Length: 405
Ligand SMILES: Cc1ncc(COP(=O)(O)O)c(C=O)c1O
Image 1 (cartoon, rainbow, N blue to C red):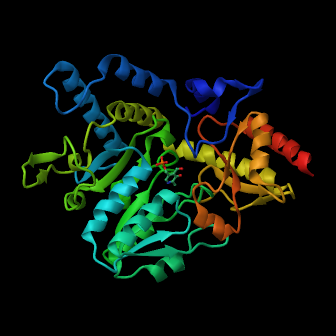
Image 2 (image 1 turned 90 degrees about the vertical axis):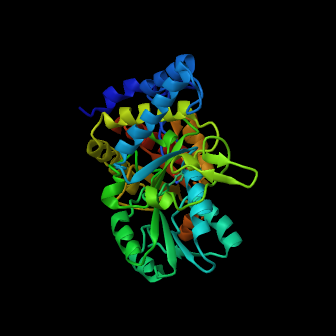
Image 3 (image 1 turned 120 degrees about the vertical axis):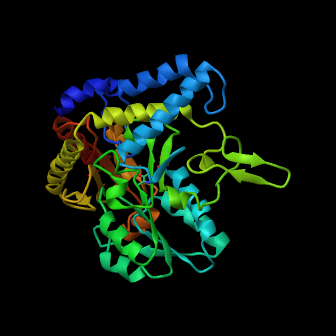
């Protein structure tokens, strides 16, 4: 049964004290805490199983290869990848998007368009800036409504036969808004465009099944779903991936190397040059198994409940400006500001009370510009957070505000 109080036992770092105060972690949208099961699996790998993969002729290497490929299968099952898709291990969402930007763009022609939204994390903006300049591609931006939700009319307006890729986040890391990606994909495919989804904030909140939504690519990071740092995933449709040139060259990705040039293995291996993060992949698989031991619907409901609990309390405080309201199409991420007080001053005082929140532009400067804000305070929730923590947070927030007013 889903019970956050029971779940908290699985996360050692939540039981720490900071300056005599209980640590309350409301920054899971940046990085989730780690369950003991994942930590144990990682240390088991490094203590007894560490070896290189795909190239050894000995027991340790064979076993590590088996675990590494099992981890790929676990991730494939987790996102419903099926036989027509591949799982590429990368270092994270940023790396996955850079891979698509640098490799898929090689298939495009001068003047072709990439369509992104103004709510994207910089990792889904800057790679496109880099390749657009080099390959003479045009970036179009989907506008947002005042509260940060995607403007469907703007999407339809900007989508055209020139659009070759729509690169969209499934969930905003600032507002927690969930985008209607299935409808976006349907429309994009009608004009022949491919779709890359940034699933960084989505996969740890609700079910993401790549075959059901029919996306062409999906990127996400291990550390946001209780996994280790430095490991991430790019899912892609195999047919498409095998048309794309490798993004990086090196060992383990070639068929043959001659003085004249190299030929390449099929996906996923053509995109995994060099020694991969074997331990990271195994740790990620353990994290995914841990996450999957709970009902995803219940996890989603829990986070939304925490969100609405906080927002209801904040709505009663005249000093607070909430940027987005309502839990209907959102995950447990809440951005707000204290009117007339800099966000980092408030987060410093909250930190002194043991409350970890994020403050700043959250790598989403286009969205900050849209909001006319230099930065927000962001509280984000996960399975180990409770209503009691929110009650305490509001008390600490009022105390911090009192310091400035
Ligand atoms: C929506 C979104 N996309 C991409 C990223 C980048 O993830 P990473 O730094 O793990 O590559 C983040 C991280 O906060 C995010 O929230």
